[in-house]
Length: 75
Image (cartoon, rainbow, N blue to C red; front, side):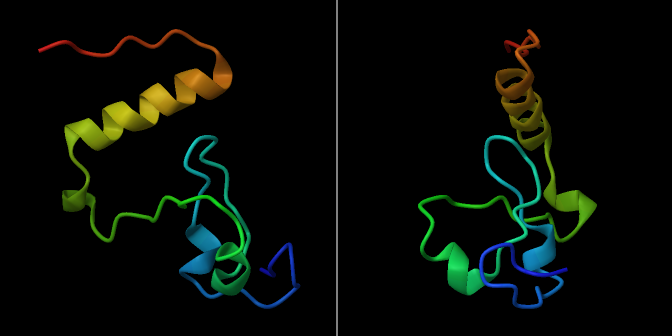
């Protein structure tokens, strides 16, 4: 894959970075990403790194983007 800003080849790490709200792949290299005021979501290194709160946050973000009402668990 190539950076959508400068056309440089993306590293494996850069190719899996996602937008924090839309969760779409960014397809932007690290150098160009420094000029953009967003903090990308990095992939979890292992499945054990993901906990319930992370999954709940992803569902919440999806509900904001899609407009679907997805309830949050209240403990």
